[in-house]
Amino acid sequence: MFRLEETELSKAIDRCKEVKPTVRILSTGVYTVTSSKKDGTLYTVRAYRDPQGFKTLDCNCKAGQRDKACFHAMAAVSLHLYMATVQMILKRRAQRIARGR
Image (cartoon, rainbow, N blue to C red; front, side):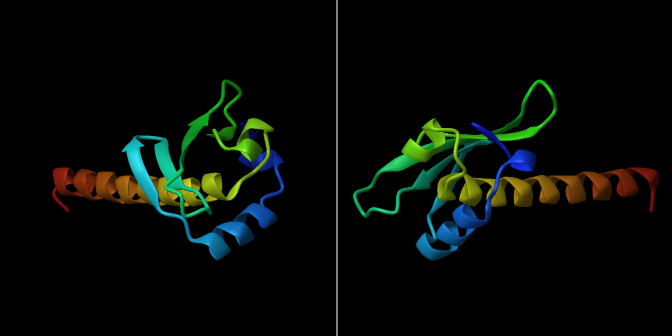
């Protein structure tokens, strides 16, 4: 587990760009991400806010188990942020429609 606000992410982001893993949504805030190896290994990443309100990522890979930022988490959080943005846009559109604009 690591907090986005308190962790150096550049190496994990660079590795994510290099590997280009596949991310699948299991449920809101829960994703599977492919390994860098071509053996079919999948890791589970959870994105959530901890009790103090920090954006937090948890991956079950070796780096994630040591509370380090990993490329799996970077791949998952990019999809997570995209989905949150889309939901926000759709909610605002629905509110405008409801107001008759």
